[in-house]
Length: 536
Image 1 (cartoon, rainbow, N blue to C red):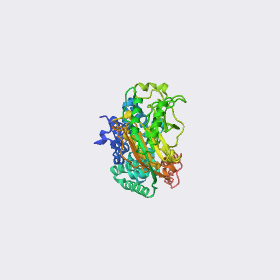
Image 2: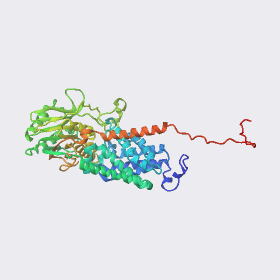
Image 3: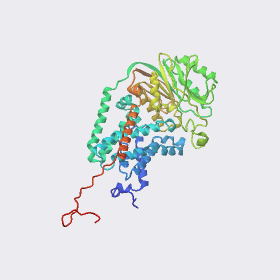
Image 4: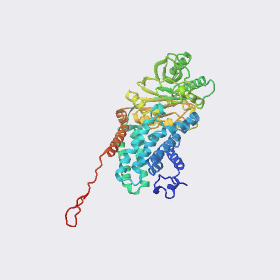
């Protein structure tokens, strides 16, 4: 194998270093290392694995012979991460999944460079200490940028892998999923140093102790939700229904399931996303049937209409509340749509994507504002539709606006027999813990789930094989969590850390370097002890 000329001799010894001298082998290893964290997410849900899953990726980047190679390691690891966490999109987006993963993976290139900058060689205690702050901050910036709705939204944030861990959910109530991501990356950095750099183990251990101390202090200090009562909320999940008349058949199935709730005294009945495929103003017969169900169950029914609106052009996905006398007028139009799913960005240029994937043939229209609805019994609910549950800011704003319960209406029917339904359902636990408000996640085809105000699971999931209606006793809580009060402060702190790094590096780059004074040399003397004169 030909030796790359720009690689130092120490990287061309024997064993793994020599094997990784091949750029292609190193690229494959980087992509595989980046893919490892997917095992921490549902369906495997090995939450504990998240705390070591980044270690191989970090060790690879720190061993890079140059900063450019470390950036490539970051990029290719990011490609592997995005592709693995979103692999269930392949049947829908086909080759677009790989292209999008490659583009978004580039966000990790600076992170790979930072890993080598702070952990390359034998880092000093100061560099390790700085790495425990800088590297998690850099990771948070990647998650922040890719959380933009136009880039696909914040699906697969590393901190969301901790959705079923009690202490982690308490941390989420303080700093949201962002704080969890920061701490998980910090632990990975410390473990990587412990594994690879014997001389720097003391600051690495100190970092682990500090993380444990912060977690313990938060467990004791952070306020717990003050439970004030409970409401009974029913979830109707019809299951997979196909065929040319699926919209009519689905409505009939949901109607039959809702009838079974008579006598169970629910305070609210929730149907999933796209549960009604017709505008109710155009189909008064369906509106009347829903009103009859409301009278039968004694509760309002929250449906989701996916159809052309009669009062304005275009298709909207709308949460609509129906009472015993018909639609109440309360309506929420979905604001954040799925790119290449519910709309095609720059459709005039990329419209051909519908021929190779399952993107919508006609773009859905966006709503303009979030809505809190009063459904009676003193209950105020904040609806979200589909992947809006991945956005922490949306549930936070609903809690600020007075929502006592968060409602998510979803449909993961496209992704049955994949990891997507479990991943989607788990997000509701984070949103509940962040806001201190219970959250109901109702879907057409599963997984439907309910979580209490601390993020704890209420009752059993309705899996992807279920066609059923279930009633949950949902605890209500009051009070404001630190996350709702202070917002995304971990992101702001990460920005300050990186700004401090840039300022420090800039100061070092432009600082005038001191030049050593010329040594004083005694004048040369002639044989007659008189000073010699140059040029003579």
